[in-house]
Every structure is written in structure tokens, then in C-alpha cells.
Image 1: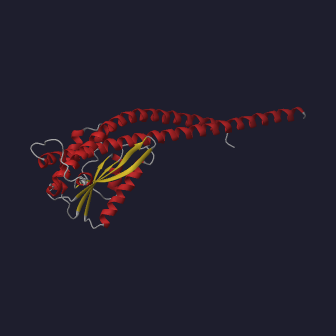
Image 2: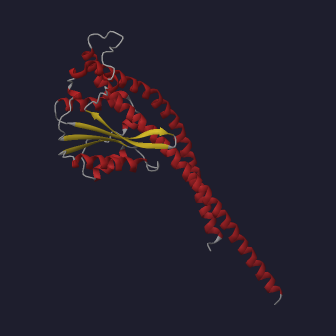
Length: 290
């Protein structure tokens, strides 16, 4: 049985750790509220823009021949993977790393010769470097203060490379914020652009009830780059909300575990203290009969 001093030291240590995890939970909760507001305001806009482009694409039909929507055999692909810059967020980063490696293996199994990785987040950048991938930056600043212009510049470089034929596919891998208690890995193709015309082609012959200038094709050509950049920006906001949500859950779990450990240690301390008192009383009583 440990001594009273050892148990007391451990109680103080666990109490200090509990204060830290509790404070981190409060900070993460505050950041989560802001992240929820950001993604809650952006997601409907992005979905509406996608619907608008799909509607216009349905009007164009077979006339869609944009370079960003051109599907070709995939020989060179880029995987954009999102993680966090720091740890203590449960399985958030490990899930992103596993999903990214799975996507890379799938692409290679499909015969893709060259797979590049574009990380957004320090944790996944470190892991990808260990796996032999090279890149210029981890783009950690995009997560600290997410700004549309910085993310749009990344999307613009990828679109330029795709239009020039330097890459044939861009895949986006990130944690999707489903709700406060759940984050789901999400994988989608950023390039080539997929315009879902199923709903519009089903009603063939029903034109849009407004006039578009200069033309459907001109408008869609202008909207495509904006839609791609906005999708990447929305994914970053989505991943941030999922990160803060995962950290809230992780810190709450750590705080609960600390409470349980404190309860057990306090019980052990009381038992040890009572045993010591009983031993002293027995020594006193035994000495009185001698």
C-alpha cells in the first residue's frame, strides 16, 4: 500500500491536470461556437452556388466543354488533406491520416503514377513527410486565421495546373462536422468539377425563368473557379468546426477521468490514513499492557 505522502502528491498532480483539461474544454467550446457560426453561414451559400451551377449546366446539356470539367485518364493526382496544427483532440488527426493514406493507396491501385500531397495542418504534414511525400509548406497559417483569399490562391494554382494538363485529378479529404458529438471523414473530388445535372435534365424543356447575360456558358465559365475556391474554403471551415468539437469531447472525457481518479485516490488516501491511525492505536494499546 502506498504511503500517505505518495497518495497526497498524486492527488495534487491529478487535481492540477484536471484544472488544465477543464480550462482547455472551455476554450475549445468558445472556439467551437465561432466555428459553428462560420460554417453555418457559409454552407448554405456554397450549396446554393452548387445548385445554381448544376441548373445552368442542365440548360447547356452537351455544350459543357470547360477545361475544369474535362474528365481524362488519371496519371497525376493531388490529395488535399486537412488536419489540425495541435493535438489533444482525440482521434481527429489519426482519422484524417488514415483516410488520406487510404485514398493514396486507392489511387495507386487504380494505376495513378504520381500522387502529390497538399497538406493543410501541421499534424498531417509531419506524418506525410515521414511517409516520403515532399511539399513546400504545411499551410498552418490557414487554420490559425482562415481567410478566403489565402485559400482561394491555393485553389487558383491547382486550377491552373489542371487546365495546363499538369495534373488530372484533385481529391479533398477532411473531417466533416456532422454535429457536436460526431465528426465524419469526407472525401470528394475537387477537380474535375462534377456538375450534377440529374435534376435539371429530368425536366428537359423547362428553361430557367430568368434571362442570363451574356450567356449560360459565359456565366458558368465565370462561376466554376469561384465554386471550386468556395468548396475548398468551406471544407477548411468544416474541418475547423470538427476539430474544436473533437477537442471539446476529448477534454470533457479527460476531465471526467480525472474526477474518477480523484475519487479513487481520495478513497485510497482515507483507507491508508485509517490504517495508519489503527496501527498507532494498536501500538499504544499494546504498550499499555506491557
